Image (tube, rainbow, N blue to C red; front, top):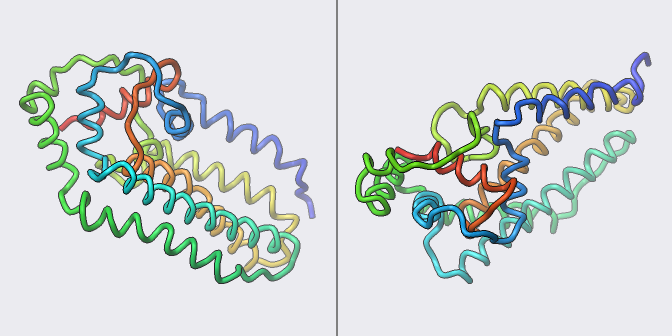
Length: 245
């Protein structure tokens, strides 16, 4: 074939450059860094954290939230392992059937947290939760809107804030997902023996794209919004500023 793996390297490089070309766009990378770092510093204002916990957090004892968080992360890891193994065998023209325990772990691990959120937190619309939290924390929605927060960003990517209102995917997210798909297609094309295999590989890629999205959603719902500073602070402040009613 004309295309080789070496030919796809510049495409992958351009895609990586595109992801970070708008420095002020808070994207999934900022979100991952925030949730993977420990609490630090004296910022931001406690009202910011109280507001975010009220809007996005599952209200339950710490041990119960931790249980559902690890259950969800375990299911996500199992799903990733199964999909990665399937992709590996697919690119080597072999058939792979994931073991039953991997599939069951993925279904139960991801299904249980989603079910719990569906019958508790998500029963109240996001807009209502935002208004209620603004009144509870700031006294009124007007006071919340006038609360001064320095947010060094133009916008928050859909992938960095899975529960934001509006279109399912922002234009930035679609652009990045599309270019990532093209780069991946050029990379795997020489290794896939059939068109059906190529389509299967692209579907697996789509599942990989959504995994950071699910990870951040689990952390927002079951982890603890914490104090932060440095390069993770813009994520927290941008989420707050974009979440005000």
